[in-house]
Every structure is written in C-alpha cells, then in structure tokens.
Length: 123
Image 1 (cartoon, rainbow, N blue to C red):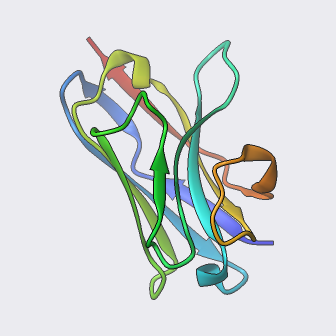
Image 2: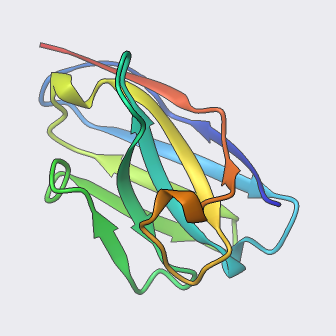
C-alpha cells in the first residue's frame, strides 16, 4: 500500500484560492491513480477529482468543475489540488487517496488513504 500525507489546508474567505498537496511513500506512486475526496461534517464522503497514472486523464465532480484542478508530479511522488474561487460549501476535510487501477473515479477502488487536511471557507 501507499502511505499518503496531505497538507495545504486552512481557513480562507469565499473567492480565495488554496493548493492542497499530497506526498506518497512506500511504493512506486506512478503506478497508482490518485484522487481527492472530501467529507463535510454530518455528510458522507464524496468524490472531488481523480487523475490517472500518467496524468493524461482527469475527472471532476460537477460541483468543482472549472474551479479545481488536479495534477501530479511522479518524480516527486506528489499530487496536487488547486482550488480557486472557493465557496463556503467547499468546507470539508480533504483526503488524498490512491488506487492500483490506471484510472478510477470509483471510491471503493481506492485502497490507500491519507488522514486529511481541513479546508474551511468563510462567507
């Protein structure tokens, strides 16, 4: 399994930007699809974005499309989530996850998870 550690969360105002980072260790990260998921208080965890092994394929939840961008740097074992024009409804604990599939947006196929980084957006 891959060990994942997220960073970059914080408290921001609506309209601001944040970049989340996730560093992977323990295996060849370039052989894993990577994704970001989030969980708001009292809600189920939901899919945010995913990227394939090579970075050539991405997919986003409708709620973040055109505002968030997922990217990766396999040489550095890093995955990023650039979040622009943040809204209060983006407030959640954001988790990085890895799947041994080439590409996946199906949460059950992600078997390695980080502990999360908190993003809070004030109105």
